[in-house]
Image (cartoon, rainbow, N blue to C red; front, top):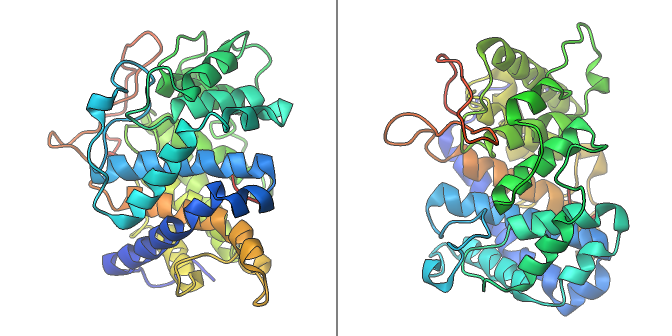
Length: 359
């Protein structure tokens, strides 16, 4: 598919979002059901549950349907719990996340794969939903994860450094990590390599850098005018390439990255083509049967195989569209800018507009 496709209208994007959210809501419980625990490998299932918690956090924030998340401080008490959201799909996601985060059986699974253990523990603590007991399992997992040098710059790639900084901020734990502006400057996204082939750019690295800088679109990414133009150019070119290749998972991430950088994917040529690609690929049930057109699940796939192949792409589209469809600005017309570790607000360009899985 080229990038000159007619732009989808808002109703089409709303339908795309509703389908993806409906499929996730109906099937996410499998991740913590006895059958899912038996059929799914442990580490991919842990990753999928962390992704689900991130979706819940963003979905609830975008719709105003739940209390605050992203801190393990005193605000996470029973008094902060609101009634279960009226959206049945969001309520299903909330129920699964809350069940897992309350279970003492889950934290040991975070450390099954040693190379991911401490990062998983940090994310698990940071993504705990509001209303958990102050001494719940997530607190002990977080404390174990941040022990040692995890929250220092020691031997971290720029991308891992940025991801750790983001989740440390959500968890409200003290750290010695670099500030966001400096982390951007050393990122792959910031590198000005003229003529660099698109194949050498890691789409996940680029998009997640944007997500962490902008808190998934809930704050200004804090880039100056030149850096913002550079980031937008990279993301738009990557979107064009992903559309041409029929890559549903990466295309969904790039649509969200455009939005986080202040672009409107409904009107940029690459964004419009991306949304149309996704709308055409979505199954009647709302799922994306694979990560790409060349990775499509065969018609005779078992239910478990279909779930494992479809979960990642479908969750990405649900996440991207629920954020894309929210109002971009607050009543004041601006999103809160990011803060440095010292609490100071870095300068932003006045012209800058607002705004892994069970394999």
